Length: 248
Figure 1 (cartoon, one colour):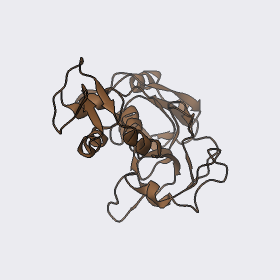
Figure 2: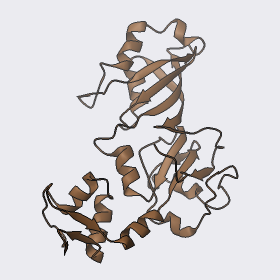
Figure 3: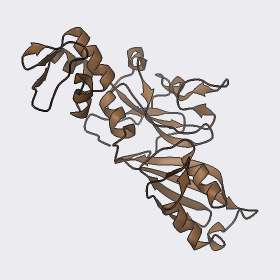
Figure 4: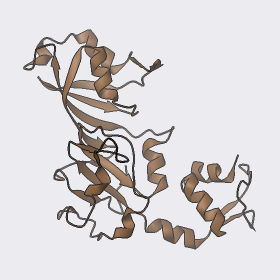
């Protein structure tokens, strides 16, 4: 396989980072400086210069409590991207990381996964390709937890009492989106009007579309956890750093 893919598979960096490091002359294969597009096998020895490791250690991952009305990615249809909220003023005072904001941290800062414009909660933005791969790569096993307020037909109160158990079971397993079966999910009632979803995939507007398929309408959606990282008491519209010892 190509060297950049092999480096990504080994968890050294993202493919884009690998290409940058190769261009800088920071990667050696079997003792020789690597060239772009080099093909390697599992037996080949890959070494990375300390300069690349130093640059990587300066990359930040940011946890934002996204409010309603912001898009996760690039600006679209006149809506503001969530990254616009990352500045010194909105840095949460309760951040225990002791890291300080610098404008250079915005360079290459990208969201790891979607959170719709009308959804709120935990959004991860990172400069680190390893984090992005862990959260949104094809082989990602990191689960995400959501609280979802629903209504069933005209019923907005005590929805649990009238919603059929077999349809709840379908939310857990058995639905198709875009012609493809969804991975099994964990879905249960948090209270009479609110469901708790735990997913290991993130198709566009997935929860809203799943609910539509079983006759539910989503009236509120909040992501509260990604892997082992909780939204906690991070205020709406504010952000903190992923601490050095914190892992998804």
